[in-house]
Amino acid sequence: MSAHIKVGVLGAQGRMGAQVVAAINQAADMELVAALDVSDNLDQLVTSGAEVVVDFTTPDGVMGNLEFLIGHDIHGVVGTTGFDETRISILSQLLSTHPLVGVLVAPNFAIGAVLMMEFAAKASRYFESAEIIELHHPLKVDAPSGTAIRTAELMTNARASAGMKAMPDATTQIIEGARGATIGDIPIHSLRVRGLVAHQEVLLGGPGETLTIRHDSLDRVGFMPGVLLGVRSVISHPGLTFGLEHFMDLSN
Ligand code: NAP
Image (spheres, rainbow, N blue to C red):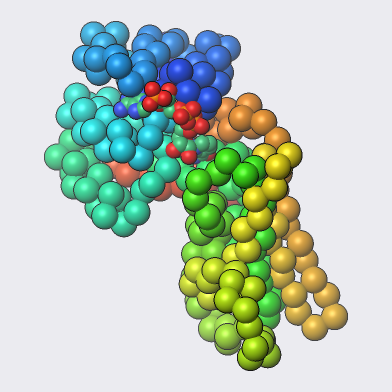
């Protein structure tokens, strides 16, 4: 490997991709060798010698991109959304034939959001009640957010491991939707409000106390330290890594 990590970006004209291009250009240990968008030929990634490629494209395009990267032994750092269990298993299969390649898929690259999920999972075994409120700009097409779904899954697993009972809830009369959508056993409430960016609150409650964990994404620049961490780490982590937390030392 050269002193500088040779990095390519897919979706380079997009909102996230453009930010990634700027972050890589500013990183002392990286060299931007390709910045491609939808109409460009992926072969440029090979001719430019890219070692790692960052993908912020679309759910429709990302699987084809990853097939190309893995087939050419190029590592991938993926922020594009839409990774369900089927896609994860296809990706694992592709990687099994190229054992030296690493791919990181991260539903959220904001360090604070990863910590929020970690803290929420840790706290959930200590509180009877737990609910999530996610708040976003009104142009967001999916609800609940991927981060809220992931948080709820982690909290559900933590509650199950701790043998927690169902949450207290005396609701018997309800207008549909009033208690939100439930993932695992955690209700999620999605707000879409002009002026907001991307925010999430996790509310936990026990007798006589509540704990609120809140994260606010205020600008796309907040995702960049996580993306750069992913680029640096994925080279030495062959196989599939799901979630940036696996590249953060959260034991301290
Ligand atoms: P965006 O502004 O629409 O950017 C996507 C870019 O990728 C566009 O320039 C698009 O070109 C291009 N593109 C589409 N298909 C491509 C392909 N097959 N190869 C190369 N380029 C392709 O979207 P965004 O806001 O940057 O978001 C991109 C993705 O990242 C979304 O899935 C979003 O949900 C996700 N995201 C993830 C995180 C995270 O932390 N994990 C944070 C923010 C956003 P055209 O416009 O010409 O199609």
